[in-house]
Amino acid sequence: MRVAGGLKSGLGTAILSAHDAGYPATDAFADEDDVTIIEHGDEPTATPDLIKDVTTQTFVQDVIEESRRQPVLIDFWAPWCGPCKQLTPVLEKAVKAAGGRVKLTKMNIDEHPTIPGQMGIQSIPAVIAFVNGQPADGFMGAQPEAQINAFIARLTKNMPAPEGSIEEALQDAEAAVEAGDPQAAAAIYSEVLAQDAANVAALAGLARLQAEAGALDRARETLAKVADDKREDAAVKAVQAILDLAEQAKSLGPITELEQKVAADPADHQARFDLALALNAAGRRGDAVSHLVEIVRRARGWNDDGARKQLLQFFEAWGPTDEATVEGRRRLSSVLFA
Image (cartoon, rainbow, N blue to C red):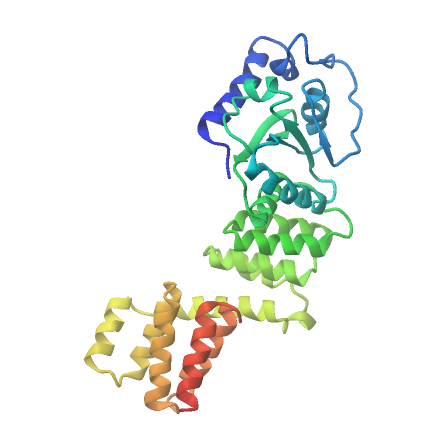
């Protein structure tokens, strides 16, 4: 979702050329016939609207100057553009959900071609984010809602979440995770914790991201902040299970050696058990399930029902909706109740 190289270089050139010439950044987009330039010493007035149309004449005031207060998105569109019609309502919904931390402006490029021409906009829809009077980020083409939320989260990661929006922020964090953007999700969780340091969902969510990134010590520190009476929360227990499994995996040998042991003696349940732990640590959840289910099938009572208990810990760590959990529960049930 980042600005494409050519587009971003065009934006940078437009801004930098003005600075190099010794003029305010706003002059970079000046058209002496069309643009009303705010004098460098003027005090800009605040714009209360979260979403508004912008013209060539109002671009400097509504985008450049307004972006010195909070990020401002400008959506370049045209009436004939099908993807634009898909993107606009998603953008508007995301901006409203951000609670005033970001504003959206929309420019019809057919009616106002000067600005998009100067900025090097070659295809639409194109969305550019301005921060502190400068283009900071952007994307082209229609994007799903989760991607838009993650994009806005990156822009506003150092801004406090508005009052009453914690639940919405947590939903945005989950959407960012689903969209494959853990950095944006972590930023949102941090924003929530800045308002509510004891928020269990945010602490568990952040700790999980840290654990999955391999920052186990940081994850433990984050999880330690959860109040004692909240330790049984499902999300907290899931992160604790991830940390426990990571600790178990430290003492295991290489996967190839464990596989050789199991191949040489299929009844070596300890080797198969260790192999399952190692496979899980390597992200091979399906294979890990297979070996533990095989132990249950061969000798359920082994190690005080250890294979079944280990599977339950896997399921807790992976979460109830994970594909490996769903499939693992099905396979375990088929053995237990055969």
